Length: 121
Image 1: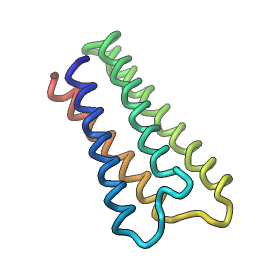
Image 2: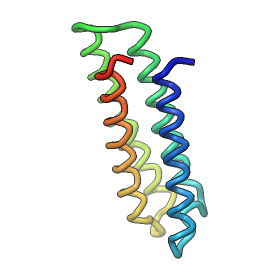
Image 3: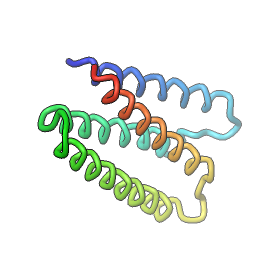
């Protein structure tokens, strides 16, 4: 198990702890239908895939940049699909805080991946 995976995994555990604390302190049950946890698992899975692909095939140069841009575009596209599916499934019961949560997760995982590859661990 490499250092990037350990960091990614510990960061995900930290986010689940934050979600549990938010669920305890919030009046409404955020985990009622599981979308908040699914969002964390989505970003963890995609970040793991992105890390695996970028570490194995490309270490620097144009190949790394092209792969990183393609994977970032794919993450954006799949994130939009995720939000659309959430909207269709929830219908009129859409929780606006979920969109904020999803956007924060997107930014945090993007920052984490950038930091992991910039540090060259």
